[in-house]
Length: 436
Ligand SMILES: [Zn+2]
Image 1 (cartoon, rainbow, N blue to C red):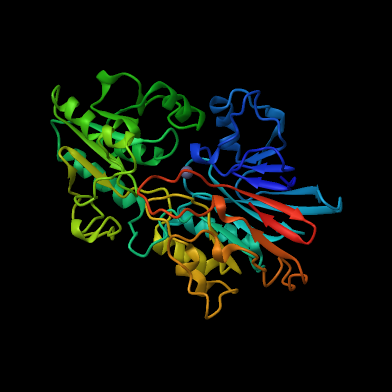
Image 2 (tube, rainbow, N blue to C red; image 1 turned 180 degrees about the horizontal axis):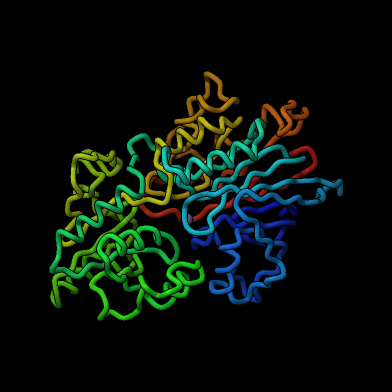
């Protein structure tokens, strides 16, 4: 494979610099290679840099390049094909996904590209307002040639309320079950704000497993040990790995004492464990807070604020507490950035949608014949794209094209599996800018 320049969330040898948006497993593949990370400088947020050695003990700390939100760094690279020097400036933008998550804005001889990674964009919330301003300040009026977009929920029916609203709904569900134990499914990182909200509202501690407690303390949360505990006797609320919350596990727990399960997620992922082991097969989210109508299919997830959360299954609730932008937020984001073009970064998601299908009118390279394909697009419209403008506003030099190999970006199947891959490599091959 042609040696490249820059990789984002893609960690195989061959690039001159590497960028990690955040520490979720589907963004770190390759980082844990035997012998530890040694392929090149690795840029990430200071928070991610602090957590990295606990996830990847073999990592060489001298290769880490922490970049705080809003900060920029200059990179001097060289074309692997012509040896000509290339300069690149990268700015970190808060992604508001999980702790330490960043977007990266690249500008320089490669043009102007924005890689969102996973992000949330809660219009009207202070944090999102500040992130928006940071992005606009970093852009300084330049046009983004290409946006790599978190397309996890890129469908008009996938809308949900701000996290704070859903957090309060979750508190109300717990309040309505005073005699129940509660388990809440969480990842190894993220949703700390939800757990803190529950603890404050209910004046209770929350159990987490020991590794999760270590992560929380490394994040600088609850340093006085007032909220989180590993002692089950101190609380009836437990945050557990989300894979462990299944209908079967809830049934088993309820043979011991009354227990409800809460799944804070933009997608319904409560499965019977036997179903998880089989090929993708998911129970329709008919009773979820964001679902209206079982017979209308699993993509009917519009949120109705007047409809209280209902049982997803016996003893279990699923609520749209999401750390990914919903469709209306993606639209606002695209209206803010108005790039030349956009591609999705998620190869497999609950409902894969090509973002160009919905947002091509917000892209300056759209034309009347570009109808886009909502699904089952294997990169057709992502090949040989020519940025209309460069970062300094000038036209892209003739013959200089962005080529995107879509094999890792698009999959043909619409599935309710969580995404299983993302990341991009940005190469410079003579007059072509390739992204694979
Ligand atoms: Zn993530």
